[in-house]
Image 1 (cartoon, one colour):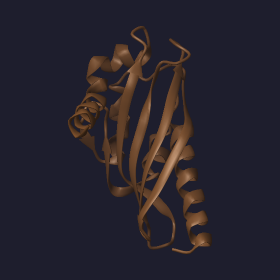
Image 2 (cartoon, rainbow, N blue to C red):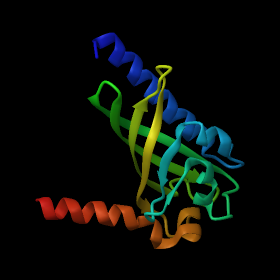
Image 3 (cartoon, rainbow, N blue to C red):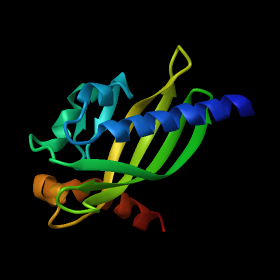
Image 4 (cartoon, one colour):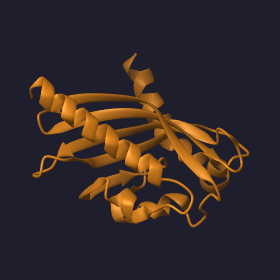
Length: 159
């Protein structure tokens, strides 16, 4: 991939991440969230459960926050081929319960589509921290820290 192609791909990938974050809010547009993914993609919740993007709404377990906003702070994009990129994006979420309700990172695999656009093929939500009095803790409990604990254990073994 030449420099111009890589710059365009980075812009498209970043735009998809921001579209996801913008729609992952109170009264979420779940169809818009699903449109950030390939139709046969994987949406892996922070407890390890895997869903198709069309069922992303299950992340809130029937208890959507009255107010929630996701903010992306850092995005690392690594191209593993001309048609695939791996990303790691730091995020935090504010809710009506707590200004910093929960935080962590999204580990994504993006794939280039036939029309030249990029979509999420695989997303893993890794919640690293949650306020014990926040929405995430009330709805998901410590179960939502499972992916972080697995990741942390893997890193400890490799060091």
